[in-house]
Image 1: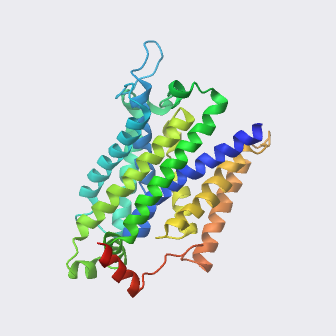
Image 2 (image 1 turned 120 degrees about the vertical axis):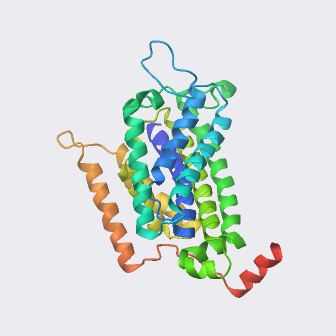
Length: 324
């Protein structure tokens, strides 16, 4: 039975990382925004969603955090996505007005490092490095779930969320807005010459991707019941970027494939394998090397990824104009 729980845990991470990867895919694969701060947006969604359901810190618990409330977890999940949008709005106004390419990436990764240090050292915000813990399990009051049955119900809920997010993202990427975002990705100057508002398009991609990051972070915090700063270090950003690139930039199906290959098979699955007592860090280090080697091989031999972006044909463009 333990193997079944492991399997459903991996299934959950597949759903959650698919949502996360779609958010980065619309930013990086869709609009060309090299957002190295992406994991910070995931963290904002996780912290806000978790705090809004955990309630105020109990006296004597040793915890200290803001936004403590007893909101229903679905409302808290949406609030986590909106909070990430707020951070995306702030970052976009700072970065998109004057910066491009490498300079934009440097500013965003600096934002992530500043946010990480602030949350770690300012304990009253989200309890510093200890983070949130004891977050109530969703549906526990409705279905009287125990620790064993919770995973099955929450996997089903995560699947529904994933399908809804897939449908919304697929509609966006096939729309004229999606084509305008790809035009910005290919050449901002040409897009601007054709009358496109590059700043507004980049902000749109940033906000949509940030919302997906917040929802993915909320799912993770509800599943694990805890979240702290060790969950949003730079290697976590590397995992999401590697998944999107290996799966196929600009392709929603490629992001799904990348979720299976990188976060699930190379990151989460080895955590359930027997560890060497003498070298407990050996397996994670081997995983990182394998991900790096796979990423290099993909960039060298198949830079478009396992499932390349489908190029629109003239008939597709005419059909899109008819629908919109």
